[in-house]
Length: 401
Image 1: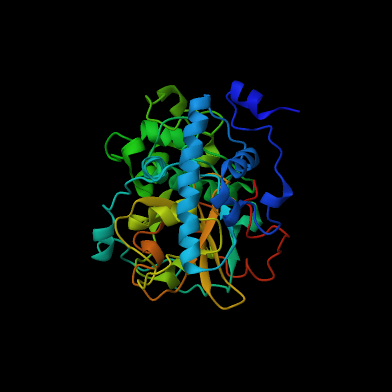
Image 2: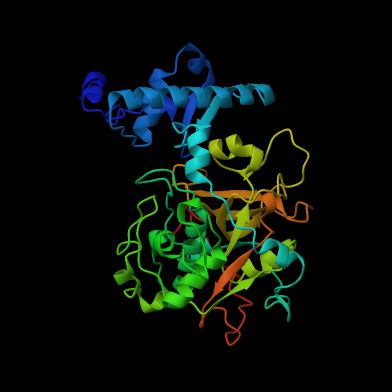
């Protein structure tokens, strides 16, 4: 059996430390911290958390630094928990060894607002909304239909990269392509980061962008490479022009469409037909986003319907919606922060909150790619796809890929 000493010598983050059953919860994928034991000392719990999350650090010094960050994060969340409830246990996600400063730099990104003003002013979307006559079903979850691509992590593999816009672009494109071909696919965010910078797109790689510009690049390029062909690096790099011509034909897109803004019913109509890309606001609530482990995401102690709406600093993909047994409506959203965050990489926010821009501003500029065979003007609108939809045991938890 490997000892803690040999782990330090190998500069591994306690990967061989056995995870005791006392630290695991049968109801959660996340490691569970005992608040009482945390007050006595957190090293054993950190060791077990690191083992469960497969953490590896390059040096013993880095492991010690991550332990200090983890302790500060967990103690802060434990203090919040104590102030709001008498719970004795705290679920901790896989980002707990990332500081708030690192989280803001590496997991968020400035989402362009170039569409918000024109959409709000009615300068786009004239001529009627394609799905305006669709009656949305009570619940939708595209994860049950082998449509949603794999959960990815925009921080893996390199320095901080605020490229959520690229992950949202690729995430929604993967869904549309899978609907056209009948099989899931994993496409390249890195190609967008490297190559979608010249006119007329002007996205900025790791410095931000928007998913409409990303879709425009895919249209003009005739498609986008697979993740395997053009893998993710988590930093800006030089565009590999020779690979631009290697994009699989099935990844080609035909256009981009907007969902009417400030309209959750319109968003539900679109999501009943296919996933939709949206921008959200994390704003002053970064700590809450950082620590999220599951359930309908909310900001304790605030009376603002839906939380903040500005700035739009994160881009994600809405893959469904539903209602709890208690009658609370929610959206199901795919994120790009890895499977150890949230509900195996997904999260929920409240739906029908009564705020014009919806929860966290997600109704500010929703949109989606157009592809013949899925959602072009020549394609029939699906009206019965969610009737008697099959539900697997893992529905609402994991993506099928």
